[in-house]
Length: 135
Image 1 (cartoon, rainbow, N blue to C red):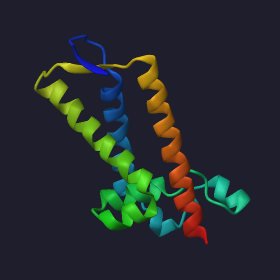
Image 2: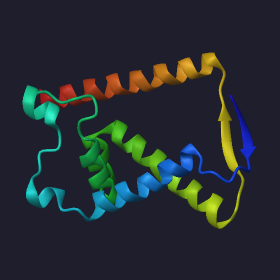
Image 3: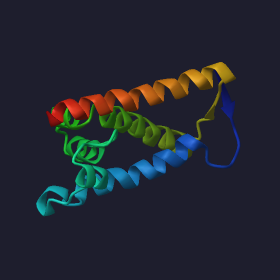
């Protein structure tokens, strides 16, 4: 894997995720999820078991309210996604406001495969965590 500077004028993937993350953070912070007790997971409502990503919205809500442990307890994977999203927001501001060069990550086919395996394993581990909480 290598990192290259990217001086293109178009938004890159990290900047786009940074923009999406700002919206997600605002919704998680200001929408009254807990007040209205909205069922967030259709899969869980239908099957009675949590999905692999169950708890991510709740995790984001807790984390935007600075309830770190509750956010982690709701979804460890959600906490990692939150941290990544927060870093993308910082990256977005650094590249737009301070005109720092954008980063382009170049991965070999093997590195892409390893990355995908790590993503799938993360989902599986999060699902095991969710199923354990159900018991």
